[in-house]
Image (cartoon, rainbow, N blue to C red):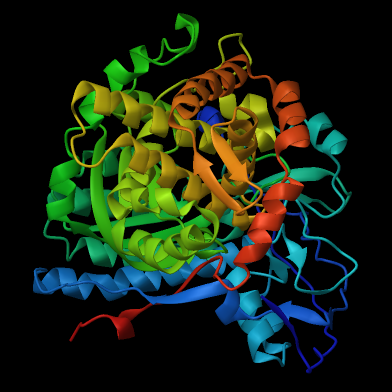
Length: 567
């Protein structure tokens, strides 16, 4: 996967100006702080980079895929709307650069090597997101765990001792004033110029919307971008049922903040609904309350009632931007993240079918041919891959959002480990749901062994995303757990892995209980110990993964209006 490059990178000196912060769901009632006229922005100290002797080759790490789909069924207004949504997405892309690194233009223009410039562009900075955020160039500095959400040099002790009520907000950045004191600034203040442009574009798109629900959402989202009040637009997004186009936009996921997991990053997806596939999925959300009651854990951990207004739909993606486009690519979405909206209305699960098919064809099948026992490869199917991914998203609605012992939300109690634990919960409860639905007769196509073996192969795929990814950590924990329970077996003579179906079923139940207990108890220390001990790739698994060097780790997109048949 790695080859020597003969070209040396020009030494460059960079300053990064923008940093960011946010307003947590629990803090929505807090009065927003007005900017201090004495605030100053602390830029990154000069960094000197030189090219590593070995650098990943883009084509060996990423398989290229064109994002397109059939748009012939759209109205003329809908076709006119798509370029506007893509333009808005590009603004989200620029904002994520500011949050994750800083000045994109200065960085990329300073790199003379084409391959390295492309890698840095894909990773939104000079750190390899698929390799534990290791520097892509020689640098004395590792990537800041807090990205640009917090000032450089800020300690956790300093953060904890700060009395500002907005410091844990999803939508604020922290910075220092001219006295060195930590202060907060809301996104709509810090990024006002970008956000005002994006807001105007959304209002322009709303005028072209044929669907009243979509029009209402775009209008409310336009306002949310410039005041950081997202609940009304989240509720409106949940009410949309018949729109052919969908648009996910704003500061959403908190994975980029690896210091605390508090701060939301900007991203966007432009989506076209696949009505044929969506029709097949419509019935499953209604089963969530029944599945919640049957979870393999004590009653106090399943008292919350999942919203029954959730829906499942399949989409083709036309454009990824910002956080969603950084490093490993999302193939399914479960939103909104606001716990109050989830409890009131449930959530929407969006399966990104064309991106999912690309990963299955270009990565999962080749991996299975190297690592999975030949007699079990017949069980690796796209319907099982689609189903496992879909029920992962559905399972985000199961379990518990608030701790049972007064420690607040699970997200707040588990801090930087919350995202990885939530992804692990969704993975394992999704597979638990598949088992239950087969038993209930709600799933009739295929067999549970298809889901088991495809699930194992899927771990080999996503564990390669590395320890900087919440999904990667979740996969490491789960793989090691299943291996210890003999649910996954390794044949040292052949080098192949296989699934033991009986032990797999038992391990699914026990791991579900373990994760739900840690979440419900808000057991930060217990989670940290588990991650420290088991959140790593074992020597055996590393040796297996080393055999996959000729298989891309993930996909990268050719995308934009030029790849769409729009006149």
